[in-house]
Image (cartoon, rainbow over all chains, first blue to last red; front, side):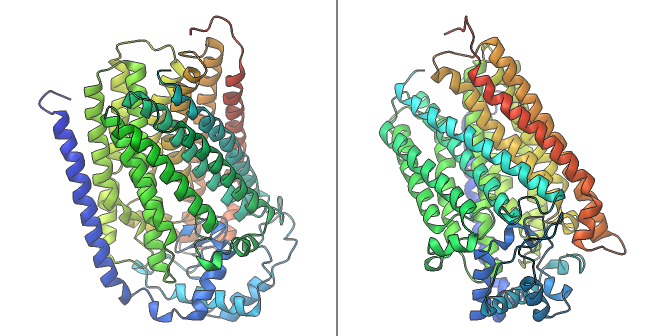
Length: 145
Length: 457
């Protein structure tokens, strides 16, 4: 870099750029908060769904699955599992409940989490709530997630 | 070594390398579980192995960053560390807390660990990379505050250089954005929105400040190029990092229920995120070409050039590959993401850690550089690990392209597990390449124990 471009110019770009874009980011965050309620399915959040989120977290489901594309890539996407399972919370509960404790020889298998009936209902309702979040272009691309 | 208190960095670097080794071993376990699904099941299910793999990565990088700060800040500030005893105390607290957490992951079922650590009082667990019990998170905050206090007092009462001020800014940012890990609303969209304030604003924001300042420090030392020149580069690189990277957060806001305008903002700004990495590559090569001295530590120079190139490839090129919204629509949350994650973390953060370790360790052991034999071994380990990581990334990319095609792109999409079976061969190749990486790591560690005569003091 030539002498015409001085260190203090570089410093000013750094400070100016960082402050400007961080403030812009805060403004966009504010706007996002204003827009979100129209599509984030918050009206579906109740005590059961909130408990479902705790069950989701306290069993580290994200350690194998993705949820709206974020998480681990070892097991299927669950953001649309409610649709994939025929819009049936019972099907989701049955699937979780019936996982063999010792796994399946040679294959990936979901652990048996020994959830109570209340927890099973909660996780299923949570996944139903997530399926109701309006994502851009209805992501994921198709039912397979 | 100019200041006695720089020596506190040594423990940090040793711990970093040990935890790095643990990270790689668990990576190999996971890699095998991808193809032999019941390996270690149900004792170590995949999610536990992954938690250990990613958490060890984060913790060892933090150890390396802290070690780097304790080593370079006294030299930059031209004074002893403000409180060396505090640095040593924090080392043991952090190490014990980290070890207990990992042991907790392995000994207890995760839900039992949540109950044991009373997660219900302040639920923060169970989110990707933030799986640590709340009590551990509080511990991280305490260690970070004590660390920043120590570094901050040293910087502010000593000579202030661009390098030490940029480093301090990065470290303060690291601590501030970590606080968002305590925000865990029931609303999943908001949860995800602010989760990225930790994850993205760390790795594509403030961590790059830390990376830039460590690289600048090492380049000043090994090339002897004028500080003015190097500091100008540093400013302009981190300026571009923040100008592109802050709004670039938007590339995570495509498909999680956030407004549509993030598709444009996220695509445009994150498409420019490779720029600072490219500048970093130019920077490193330029400085080494213009060097005014031949530093005897050839290995450290190699790591410095390596990190500049690999960060550009992994974070820059592989990030760009899937950052545009129309592409990301298909690739989001697939093996493409995994491929990018591996090369980006290795290129940017693993390699900068190994750069400063390579530069500082010989000095802390009483010599400017290691002898010929140790350096040759270290350079072999550089090539083995780096080439292995290139191939891990290529295999995961191939797996990802096929996965996207089979599961998302074709007329007749197949279920997730069917697609996984069809791409198994690439997971096997990745696992074998992972073993090569491990061999490189073993050589790396061995290079510390080579006995030689005639080493320049």
